[in-house]
Image (cartoon, helix red, strand yellow):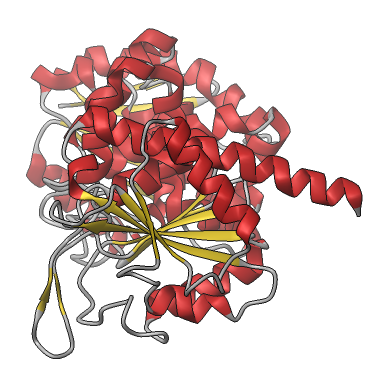
Length: 442
């Protein structure tokens, strides 16, 4: 038996078993409708209509009739059609579904007053993240400690980092590797913290900016909240997490403020063009990503086997993308990270094409940085002078390039790896000071 509740703002048509949900919805929308009107800068003239069903077939028949087709997916239990909120809800779950109406109402208003009015395409992660953020459904984790625990759980459960901007609803959005809804909410929380209130609100009018954020917002938000919540004594845990980190694309590129780029092209086992196998070089990826997080350097990491060995081919996609990024971001130096076998007779080796790809001062700063951190067995250009990456970037004006080979004994335990990273962090400071002095002299 259907029943109806109505006030000046909304009408709730519901199955009798959903009385509690209907009453809670009326109370919720009494506050949310004015809040949404202010957010979207509109005044709603029509009452919001909500339809709750406790029978799945009745719900499906209702949707089929108003759509005049059979487009409703089999798994669907909620829609927003013709400015109405429609849901099929198990009466036993109704207390957990209170925010369904405010969530779907955000979608309706965003579509009507932003997307359709401006002829914008829907960006799913932004729409879903904002609906969760605005609806009140995540208010229980608004405080810092609750959100921290939520974030750490989501991060631990995320096996592959997706590019949010490429996701659509269905298994692509929610699967065993990640939960697109949770990641979208974290992304919106991140934007709310890094943007001022006007920037955050006006973002919905800038789809190109949203699309650009969507390319790397998961890893950028993870970096941001890790810095905020994770302590320095969690170094080993963080390094292992960064080394395991997977991503949808062949390459991962992260921006920084320092004009230093750390490249890691050998992070997975690769098949060369001749059919031979190039083994992975463990922890070069983790080093590059760690320095991006903590020292604001640029990072370029090859994640998947493209059947082309990037340090043997000047013109593969990795090298082409590196050149583009260097020019577009005015990069001053590229450190190309590689791993050497434990049997090599050095701790680290610097490959500079026999001193052609960088100047003496830079190499000396790099050497001093390692020695200051207790790494003294340093080789130069023997046997690794620099591969295709160093050779290919060498010709770019005003760009230094150094290939660094790191002995496996310095990559196989956290204490030794910490020395490598500390050495590179020392160099980053020295190099930036040198750049600043040159700028002042000019």
